[in-house]
Image (cartoon, rainbow, N blue to C red; front, top):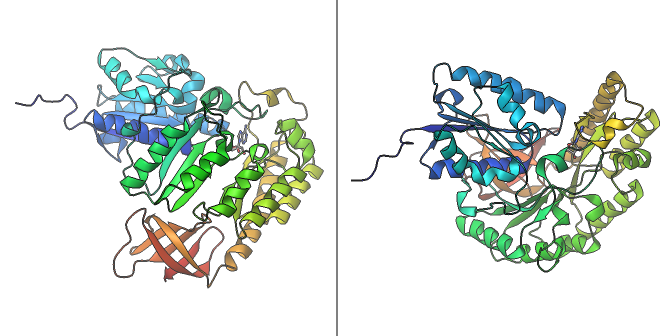
Length: 443
Ligand code: 5AD
């Protein structure tokens, strides 16, 4: 007779905010819970375990965590055995204070301890309220505990943490010091994902191109070459690159390997050297522009996207105009722009000349308006061209699906005879352009 598992019929719910690293950490936690015998649910109210995988890169995201936990704690009134865990970057940041503030919270699990979830659930069963934070040397990157269900691309962490000292950024304190995985371990995981059927692989790191093999010192250009030459890797992406760490040899990989997608997310943060200096970014706009020009030479048609912070302390109208000029000059395929948000423990807190919030709001709107025009023009120029998509899911309109071009553009298209499976490739002709997406028909 097989033993009856205590998790029989029990369900879990994971809510994820933030970056791709958090998404992958959620896949890692999902896998561990499934190995324990829990089943997933899309309804928090049905769950026996709720995990909130949080982001603290801006203040708003951090506030949302506590209002969300306030909703989840109410569920405990009807279900006293419900287990609620705070995970991710806010967990690392607040630690024990979260347990003190919310009596219904069962544990706090920082991002570097994600692989220990199953142990923490066990300890919870024994009545302990665990705080698992900090950055252990022997982090667990067990590929067998990652649940890839419902994913169209296979994500692989290659480097964790960050040693940069950008004055606005909380990440070094929430994700800890930089730590690269070995080349062999990474290649092994990529092959495993290929065998699993993934057409698209995405390498992850807060500063992905700063990866170095811990034993040999080989750099990210070597790794890109090694991954791109694995037979059967149809598409390779990586995120997020740090401009200062992008070498000529890395640029050359774009020319050498057509399966490296012609898309690069390259956060610039500001178009003004003065602001970049106050941000501690360690490059100038001239260097950034030179790099983008080299990338475009190596791979004509490459799409570039970026991150911008507006209203950084001391940002003048002239500085901001330089950011607008940069957008006009580079013609990014998309941007992620944010109002500066002061974060605990960061050096920018001590900078003078705070920007008036209403001025920052206005600048953000101006930036978005300019970018919308740029994107509309770029997208319009794609009408009539044909692209191969990786299918990422179903559209909101019945009978439609969504995919991404190699340049990472979103395309909606109608199902022809039979739908295309998640993660598979299909070709479409672009029929119509919107600002943030394209409409295509099967080619
Ligand atoms: N305020 C606003 N935006 C921030 N980012 C990081 N820290 C802050 C902050 N304190 C933005 C940067 C980064 C992106 C992930 O989030 O643009 O590239």
